[in-house]
Image 1 (cartoon, rainbow, N blue to C red):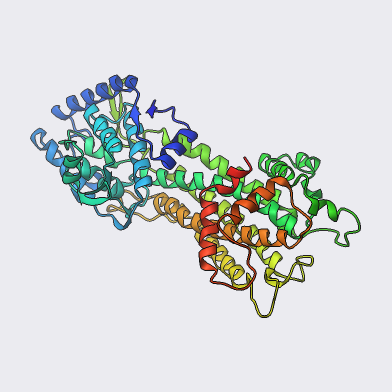
Image 2 (cartoon, rainbow, N blue to C red):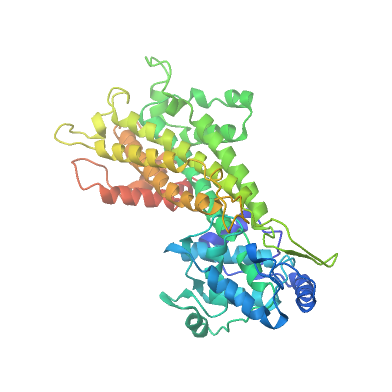
Amino acid sequence: MIVTPGQVSLSDLERIYRDETPVRLADEARPKVEAAAELVAKAAAASAPVYGVNTGFGKLASRKIAPQDTAKLQENLILSHCCGVGAPLSERLTRLMMVLKLMSLGRGASGVRWDICALIEGMLEAGVTPVVPHQGSVGASGDLAPLAHMTAVLIGAGEAFYKGERLAGGVALEKAGLTPVVLGAKEGLALINGTQFSTACALAGYFEAERAVQNSIIIAALSTDAIMGSTAPLTPEIHALRGHKGQIDVAARMRALMAGSEIRESHRDNDTRVQDPYCIRCQPQVVGAAWDVIRRAGQTLEIEANAVTDNPLVLVETGQIVSGGNFHAEPVGFAADDIALALAEIGAIGQRRVALMVDPTLSYDLPPFLTPDPGLNSGFMIAEVTTAALMSENKHLANPCVTDSTPTSANQEDHVSMAAHGAFRLLRMIENLNVILGIEALCAAQGVEARAPLQTSVSLGKVIKRLRQDIQPLVDDRFLAPDIETASALVRDGAFPEVVA
């Protein structure tokens, strides 16, 4: 994929994330990148102190560095900042982080040579992926530790994955036919100062949250038919009167999914129930609101993905090198917290539908715990408990991270965003949510099948058919963990939206 820095869309970024697509910068980015590098080279040779070019870093910014020590200064910066801990980031996410850094450098405001960009491009194409521990960043001054682990491989240090092996960084480059670089003035700082780790994790959370919304809409429609719920709350005029786009969109999709259901038509008249519980009736209001929040977060993340977030910045047009604070990941932190709230709520309302379907007092004549022989069999009794556990865990994980600032670096960096773990935690929440929705799909399919000979709609019938390709109906109790794992994988991989597209 050829990208123009500053103009990369969310759909392009999702393709890079899901398909691990190699990326190169458009040729027109090169002149400005080289012009910025020339300005930095001149500043490094001059006597005036310029932060990060011929000075120390952070609290040591007042220390002047001699021109002959420029390369050593940048190397020391990278090696000393490789302090990350914890399990490595997935190769898919690390590659997305590398692309975001490449896009930022390609704006021509960071002062690195084109050779740096070319090496990152070469690593993406050859599949050399740095080993990046996922803990250690507070989201300002940039994602220093994780980006240092990424950069270490560029200089032949650190570790990298290459063709299924975990190798020393220099060895991985050599096997791929690539040559490490010697960093020039400011280049190490440009590579590790920025929000690309936090943004990559938040983007992954955003992409998966969008998929979760689609899954929730489909599975909620299936659950509504399973309990013989009413479609009256999906009436378009109701949602138009409120006006929220997400709510309108969810209701429209549910109406389309349920159109033609024999189950629905069978109880339009003489149904003794007046209203359904909120988890059925208010799906458009709840998941629609979550969808609006997710969309707004996506807009923020698209801007951030295209931004220049290192420091200082090289203003080619004016010839200035200016210190600022674009490395502060506050926008990413807010976006991640918003997505977390939305994920928790999508799971919360989905869990209540599972509880509704297994409860014979509420499910409108479905068998207890959705088993045809209750008593001897427990059916989905404990599967529902699992959804409750994961729902509760996601509620805890949804607590805001961006408000939890703490001073670092001898109080020089005295307010930080905590965007890194705020964004990374979204991956855990998505895993939990996919299980909740997977179990809901199992219960809803079982419930719809219990309504035979009445049939659901054609669209929802396709969803059940896809589920039954991998998981048979639950008749007698069996070892359920593999079924739950498989259903969760179908949700994760977008199998249900694909069959009703």
